[in-house]
Image: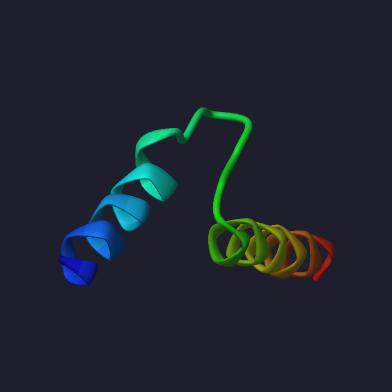
Length: 43
């Protein structure tokens, strides 16, 4: 029973994604890639 409840919470976490809301890891990756590209453009 607890497994099902946990599964629902996991699904709810990712089912409410909109273009403006990304999980922290994806936002951090986006920022890191943007910084790397900007650095390479200036070289």
